[in-house]
Image 1 (tube, rainbow, N blue to C red):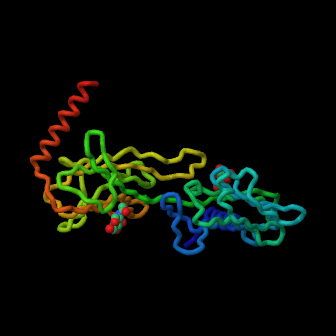
Image 2 (tube, rainbow, N blue to C red):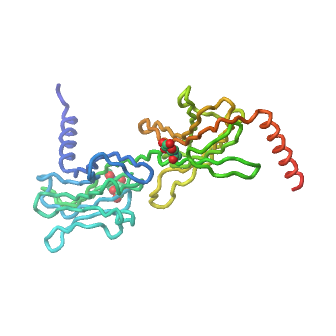
Image 3 (tube, rainbow, N blue to C red):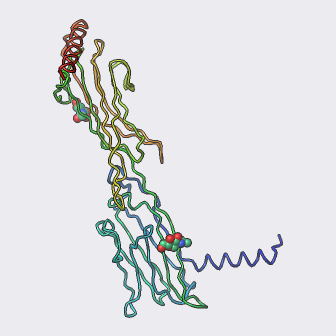
Length: 317
Ligand SMILES: *[C@@H]1O[C@H](CO)[C@@H](O)[C@H](O)[C@H]1NC(C)=O
Ligand SMILES: *[C@@H]1O[C@H](CO)[C@@H](O)[C@H](O)[C@H]1NC(C)=O
């Protein structure tokens, strides 16, 4: 292969450029939060953001700065001939409270770097950002120059912490909270609520599952007497930088205990496909039966009374 003079000059230029550029590494470059906290795989695990200037690519390095988006984070510069590394005076508050370890070295030593290290358990969505490193140095030939490079840390939030509660509906506007493993009667109206973190997307919904001894877990869709109210997503913090980056939702299931229900338990679930398939479950909420049956006739009469009562209520308002 014969390179034209133009291409050759280009290749040499690119190589030379790559050689003098600092290198910014973010490791790992993907962090997963469960709700507000990281569940780390190794202990203790860190996220390291390190900017390094290759030895021989400069005569002397004067300063290195690392920014998160446009905000100063950390810096190292010379003070009375000594390297001094620190959190930048203008660093955002959340960075200080995460208590990062900062180290760095500049000068003529040729070990030029600036490193920020966070405990993974301290990370939040504000840290999912593009980081910039700016290096001011004296090249091997020519005048003092400043160059910067960037690298990205992605932070994703998984759903979780789904809490399930149950109520026994005893009237139009009257319900009583029931404990797990309570007795239930056929024909009774239950209202279950599930509240929790539904992840990063406002579109993620809570799904309800019913367990019966014969069929195992079956998804419950809004149909017939049983209804699901998805509730509205809320909770993403809009602060700058935001430190809560998941939605919170409350879903309500109204379930009429069937005459052929002989075992009953429920759980709610949020499933997400991004960045990888993940499912969060609540604990199982269980009911026991006392063996007695409410006749369907009584149930119908009850609902007629309820309808009449609500009619009167509406009329009298
Ligand atoms: C250099 O840093 C600034 C922020 O200080 C940023 O806006 C700019 O895009 C960076 N340039 C490169 C090449 O990373
Ligand atoms: C209900 O009790 C069962 C054990 O009987 C338990 O496995 C389940 O986690 C409990 N559910 C809740 C919501 O506390």
